[in-house]
Length: 337
Image (tube, rainbow, N blue to C red; front, side, top):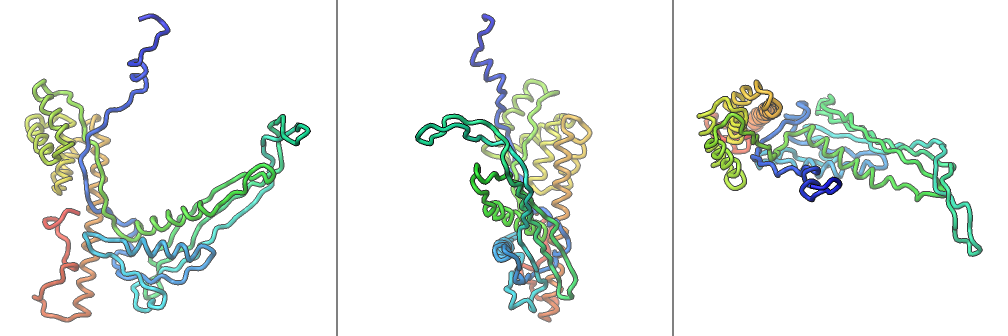
């Protein structure tokens, strides 16, 4: 090949476009950020104050009403008038704070015009401007019936703009604040309740240490993930039984066990995969997921135990009577968290 000639293949090689990775779908329940509101069944939203209080309260109410775990509504959201019937009250104040500081900044300035007043020459010059900072740190507090604080928000946002009046369009902070409101409502939702999440986790595809025939079988198992994940897992489990030390197979069988709800077995595989530097990062992530899912199952069990106790306290019945479905304690052999 002549020097100076770059082929299309060479360019594509340099770009190094990665092949699409194969994955397994992992679905589960992950924990609330805070344990404080796990036993809260109903929340009354107080009249929020501040210029953006009403908008924030509306978005929060929608997010909390939309929380479902296992097909069951997690919260009842009540208006301020029914605060006396609620387990807790959410109070709030939301209003952005603006600060300004005079600065000098460079802008394109017209330095010459023709007889019609059209600019014929421009230069970058320093001009008088204003540095505007918008800060948003809403005060949100969840208070129980006894007046004790269960939770408070520590989330804040800020945005800075340099505005030169004779050269720039006036900054519009409204869309920015609207986005902050959405972020804060999402943060509160994840703080107060567990969340059901579906993730596509990349399997490991390295075939080092396998003989040629096994490599082909492993490749076929990887391809199966595109059409039949369960069959792919069965194939990888068979390969792992024949080659228990192979890092990719060890991790992948752990991932398959996690997908199927066999969490003890998944942890065993992940802890073994942790010992090999080719699979330790993936194994660490798997163990973190298992720990989070275990914590979420504890939260769900704690809440349902509380609701059962409340149900019997409010509805004395025969101890052998059927417990309403929504109040039955979650069990590992009944459902995948």
